[in-house]
Amino acid sequence: MTDASRIGVLALQGDVREHARALTAAGAQPVEVRRPAELAGVDGLILPGGESTTIGRLLRIFGLLEPLRAAVADGLPVYGSCAGMILLAADILDGRPDQPLIGGLDVVVRRNAFGRQVDSFEADLHVVGVDGPPVHAVFIRAPWVEKVGDGVSVLASVGEHPVAVRQGNLLATSFHPELTGDTRMHELFVSMVNGRQEAGG
Image (tube, rainbow, N blue to C red):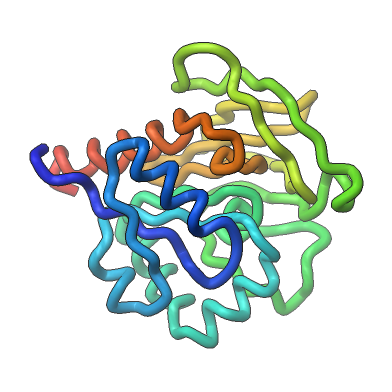
C-alpha cells in the first residue's frame, strides 16, 4: 500500500496523544474521533484507557455508541486498551448496571480486577504475535478477562488471567502499551488493519 492507514483514536477521554504518537511510529496516520462522521472516515479505531463508565456516557452524548456498535459488527478493526477492553466486552463484572458497552468481543471482563490505583504494577509478558523480547506492560486499575468465548484467542496472561485477547478484527489488552515507548502492540494492530484492507474488507 502506498498510503498510510487512517486509524482513529477515540478522543473523548484517556491517553489520546500517546496512542497517536505510537500509531505514527507504527506507520499509520492517527485521526482523533469524536463524531460519527470522523468514525466513518477511518480504517481502524483505538479505544484508549480512561474511565469506562465515563467513556460510555460520552459515547451516548456524542452520538457515537450506535455507530460504533454498527462499525464493529461490520468488521471495523478495533483495539481496546484497559477501559477499551471493557467497552468491547460482551459482558462485564463489577460494573454499573446501566454501563453502556460497544460489545463485539466474546469475553466477560472484570473491572478493576487487579485492584485500585495504588495496586498498579508492571510486568514483562510474552504476547502471541509479537516478536522480540517480552512486552513491558503497565497495568493501571486494570481489568482482566474472566471468561473467553470459543472464537477468542488468548495472546497473553498474568497468572491464570488473560490480559491480551484477539477475536477476528478485535484486539484488546488490559495494559497500556502507549505509555512505554514500545510500539509493537500498535504495529500488530496496524498489521491487522492493513490485512483487512488488502483482503478488500
